[in-house]
Image (cartoon, rainbow, N blue to C red):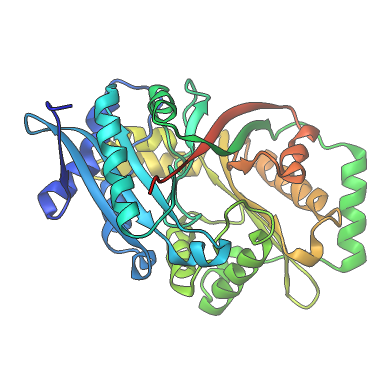
Length: 375
């Protein structure tokens, strides 16, 4: 271990090295999807979550060269909600060397201990809006833009240090251009007529700040009881997410279902996959990467199923049949063939089993690891 040193990131130069380290680490990897450097910088320095979360960043160096990175975070809202004293780690990337991984994770753990924490888990983001879950299956697949990719040896390093599985999330690749069954169509039509349901005009809705706020309030309600470790979002976090999604959100690939009183019932947000475009971008939209993004959004046979949910009083009513019928028709109309689901908690049988109705395959399995901090 004496060949390596750990430094805290506390200036612009080191932050830049922290952000760009994965570009070199995954240079020859055909599956890795680089994040935009500008978005990473914002996440690490400006997002509203940092108004209440503590965080630290470290780099591992060998002869002045970056060989690893890690962030440690504490979300007091999470700890208050779940009655825990947990720190999180994220932005964990490392060369294939156990000593480097050990130094980084020990540094994060020591800081967490100094803050009175008794456990550390990850890889996680400040809240549920960011990338989380270490890849444990599906290394040959390209992840959605909003999901992590990592080398398989990361898991070995954590397990060697005594980290254990806290939970797994599953992602499926599903066939969305298969004909709908008569039963699903019949249930969908009856639900729509019985409750006088209709689709919102997404293009108009996203121009209305109050409606955007209302949507995310319903989003908070929808996932509070069904998403593992869910942390309700602040108004500022909801606005940031809305600002990020709005340019890509259209009625072509998404739906927001409303009742006769214009109350939100359920929603499904899908985005054309931009993973290959981001691979070409290599962290920056300029000078030409914007063209690849535009091309991916214009026509694509693959979509990322970013959000699918129903408000609490509509859950377990069969409303998912209507949402899936609407989405299937939309996606078939624009020649989409495949969809990649967002990570879903493996013990949420309702969320996982719904894909049994489709031609599907397990695409990726992600894991949150946890370890007690010794006194």
